[in-house]
Length: 126
Ligand code: I3P
View 1 (cartoon, rainbow, N blue to C red):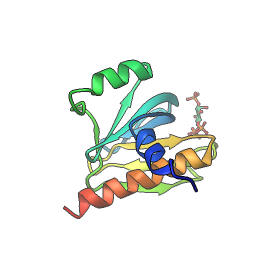
View 2: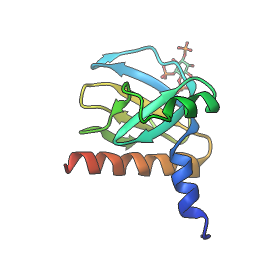
View 3: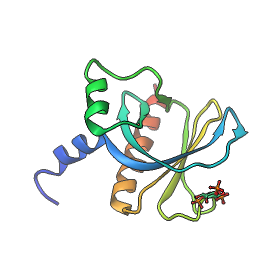
View 4: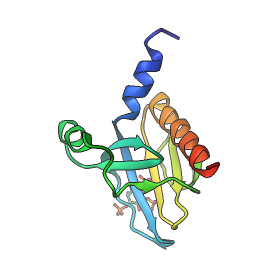
């Protein structure tokens, strides 16, 4: 739409608050617990931060934190069955972890869905 869109897109993927629920770990179902998380997509990994935006950004400075979600071989899909919330998509990692990400704002969650899907495609094609 506008000239600033490319920059805005880049900046937003450096971090934004989304609603997150981890529903499985290693294929084992967990009790769902939605929390607000500061989400960062970096080098084919997804990082969740609980702390403030300032702290998250400070921690990021030297590079990416090592404990991110590895998106290589992950499956990304919209779901209307895993939650009563709107605008939910699921990330299933190769190791069998399942995450739901959600935002009430469709444009926001759609942007993250697309960016994460692109990261998966990149990491899976070598
Ligand atoms: C869950 C909580 C979640 C809800 C989940 C409930 O209850 O209400 O918000 O998920 O539904 O089980 P509790 O807090 O007692 O664990 P959604 O908001 O995504 O619908 P679910 O069991 O159908 O996943």
